[in-house]
Amino acid sequence: MEDFKFEITNHLGVVSEGKGGWNLELNLVSWSDREPKFDLRTWSPDHKKMSKGITLSREEISSLKNILNNLDV
Image 1: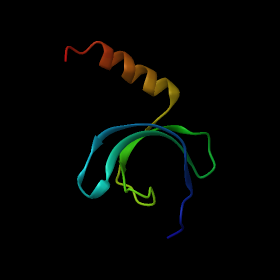
Image 2: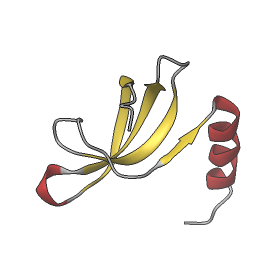
Image 3: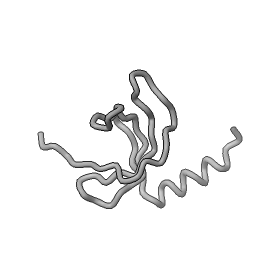
Image 4: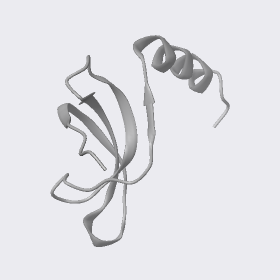
């Protein structure tokens, strides 16, 4: 299995803190030297390991923001 490259280009924030230092974070991540995208997933403290997550384009994060702004929470 071929390794893949990633780089966190901008750490935007921690959504929640988990056990053992693993945190759910929103970051801008460049996958395989591509344009960075918004990425929501849990990362190990050293950011070398990660869980499954979701990656969103600028248009998708904008749509999500509009949906969240209309929620009554």
